[in-house]
Length: 258
Image (cartoon, rainbow, N blue to C red; front, top):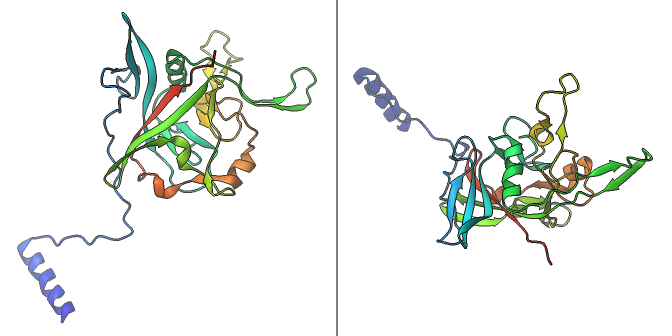
């Protein structure tokens, strides 16, 4: 009987030129979440875009006498991975989306400059080889500690928490415990054109890394090989909004103890 009714409905639709509603599948991917408003630390603070597109990278300023001080940096990023092993947290668009949770559509050097404006001090990238002896020797990255948090919508609710909550340690069954430091990547000179502007290494994809890379802007100051990262860390799918969702990635430089 049901088939007969559906058949009549189809004939009527054809005769009248009407269209039947499309069937929806439970497997249809969820819609990306829209970007929420930037969350000010204090209502007295102000936000100003500092990237060429006048929106993607912003600085949050707080009153500081007659001047203003950059207290945080915010970046509009997009979720590019929700499942699988990780080597990065954040990459540049068009690079390592297969192993990073979010991507940013800006030059990584601008991220570097924004962290400097927020008071970050560049340290050193991870060392794998002793420069004097040429022998293998690991030295962790150094630099100002930078707290990274995410602010986003998911399932109708606003969420703000450390970015580490999206990076799941399979072995410990808990979020990754390490923080990031401002290693600062490296500038690579073009040997064929010494006068050309040097290439900022993190633009190859390693902006905020989990495993050790020599060109990361932010690096975790512990020894995590690519193989170890692949076997240990994965995206915490249930906490991450749908692919394509816009999120704020917020950076706050931790003041050095005097």
